Amino acid sequence: QYACFPDNAPGNSPGELREHENECPDWTDRWMGYVEEFSPHIVVVPVSQFMTMDRRVGDTTIPFDSPSMRQRIEDAYSQMAEDLSARGAVIVFTTVIPNESVAAGFGTDDIEDTQRRELELNQIIDDVVAAHPETSRLIDLAGWICEEARCAKEIDGVTLRPDGSHFSPESSPLAGKFLTDELLALNDELGLVNVQ
Image 1 (cartoon, rainbow, N blue to C red):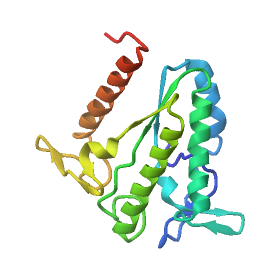
Image 2: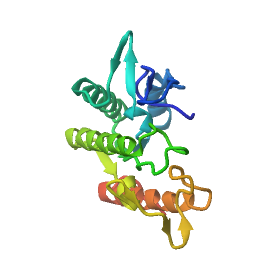
Image 3: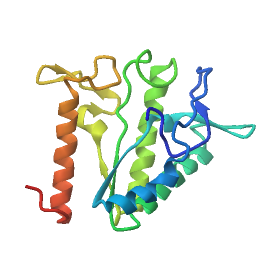
Image 4: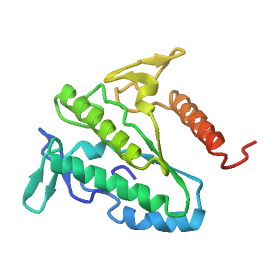
């Protein structure tokens, strides 16, 4: 699904007229079913850039930069970590890679504000992981190609994100290899599964 995130309140970023609705409103209800069905050792949770939006709850707009929104995000991902680790799985959150292009990416018409929100979201997720050291880990996908909001354009001659936001069919395998290597290292560290 395109817009699945652990907050069912609709939201948008400053300058956006259209609100984004959660396309998976029952997502949180499905988590435990997946855990029961698959009994995973590791669960990867890609953090959603949709969590950088201001949210509308009833008639009230909660700005992303407010303490109440920070708490809302922390609560959502903390609950996810607790639910998904209930049967012993380790939860791996991935950081958000800052967008470089407003036209192709997600956010406002102010790319600096979009990037600021994305970096702040990464800090919130880092705090969530630190609060759940026994069950959660972080893979710094952003740190793989970025220093703060300054991101590499290519690796080994392969353009990473031609639109400034999304990996291309050519660069996706590079991102996949990075994530796979990180997950295999975590698997070895925790002694979970013998991977041949």
